[in-house]
Image 1 (tube, rainbow, N blue to C red):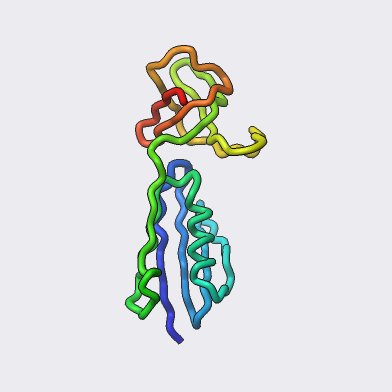
Image 2: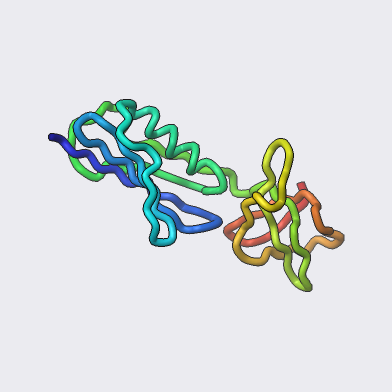
Length: 150
């Protein structure tokens, strides 16, 4: 029975996690490791596209970059050997905390916005702009931890 193993390398601006895509006997499995806990997200699908779609959905936001790399040299469809995408540098955010020299941000989402379910960015963000208030819509660069107005 052939075993193909892939690792989705994720550059994450909020938390550290690792996604794995495993193919065994024509079935695809997707697992996610986060803070020492491993969860199975897809358990034995016959569709490689479904597995890749799950990884892209999970890795699309708030992750900034991900690449799937084939680990074992086993024959695979030509278009499935590597997939990658990179998110824009600036994230749309809402100011949810104003401190003396920094701001706390949550990633803005489409539709109704419930703060208790918001994805908060780790760390304190700063800016040279003045007049930023609580619940202002801003753009944030997670690498430099700076803010600009939308």
